[in-house]
Length: 167
Image (cartoon, rainbow, N blue to C red; front, side):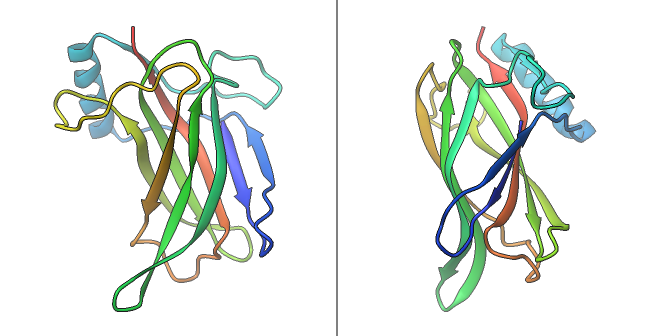
């Protein structure tokens, strides 16, 4: 699923959704494959196709209340930040959700891309996160200090690029 979020100055939202498939780097795949074999769960990337295609993960996640703007850190350093809510609409627990954030300039050209994990449950990570159950939600916020200054606040594309369900 691809969520292109365009927030104008009145904070209204417009979302265009299409399915997409993203390739992960070899190291990330190896680490995730090892983790999955340890946890005993199944993983799959989202399939290619258009928004009308009925595939297994279409409609199983909801990304809402997205805001993308600058977060100001003392002493006045402005850092791009993306916030929102992720909801599990499936009937299975989720262990991992990966987003690909694409920051856009005024011409809507992608100028920076970053992979982030609003949900990552692993006994190896040392975190206390629990799986995201059916109809549960979590709030997320990511700062992107590497994003160029040519980014236009409000123009970010969120792609759900990986989903891991608990067996």
